[in-house]
Structures are given as structure tokens and as C-alpha cells.
Image 1 (tube, rainbow, N blue to C red):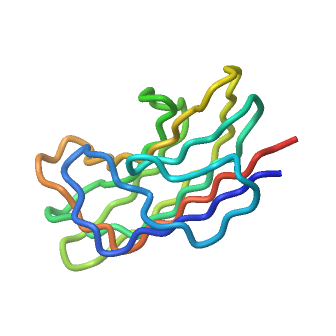
Image 2: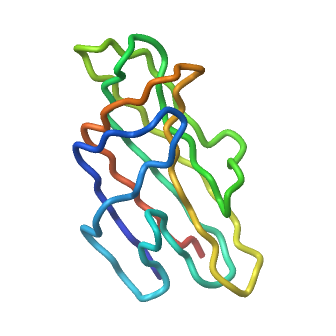
Length: 133
């Protein structure tokens, strides 16, 4: 079984921009790695993806995270909270994705600015990807 757990702290994300997954905290197996700010998963199968983030928006309003697979948003893999400029909000999302290709699939996390044109401060974000059998 392959598993990877990453963390990113104190990152200033652009409005609706990609949030790099950060650094590896734990990893089991050799089928997953960080590649260009995303997580690469090798081999066919199902993967459970959990993302939790504490975000302080630069303007008050809704803010959240979205999970993408190979550049396409995963349906239902998003979470939005209402944040204030002085008060961070926490959001989490959990989803299953499928890789039916022989090669790598890339999992990335994007800031969901809900129409705001300014970015947000990612106080802390953890990403856990587990291979399911």
C-alpha cells in the first residue's frame, strides 16, 4: 500500500491559483511523490484524497479548496467556508479518485476564491493520499 502525507504552511496563494502541497511529512511505499507542487500517483487503482486547510482571506467572504486530477476538477471535491480578514477559516474535503491509466496521475489543490480577485494566506494545509485496495 502506498500513502503520502504533506504539509504547507504560511503560503500566500493567488486567487483561484494552485496551492503547492508543500513538503513530505510521511510516506509509505514508492508509488507517490511530490512533482511540481502536486502529488504524483503511479499505477492503476483508487486513491483516497483528504485535504484540510486553514485559510485567512485578504478580503472577507467565502474561500475554500478544490481538488484536481490531471488538471480537471474532481466533481464534489471541494470545501468552502466564510472567512474574515482577521479570522482564519478551516475547510476539509475528502474524495476518492480513480487512475485507470498505466502511467502517473497528478493530484493538485487549488484555492477557491469564490469570485474574489485577491488571494489568501494559507496558514496550514495538509494533504493525505492513500491507495485503496
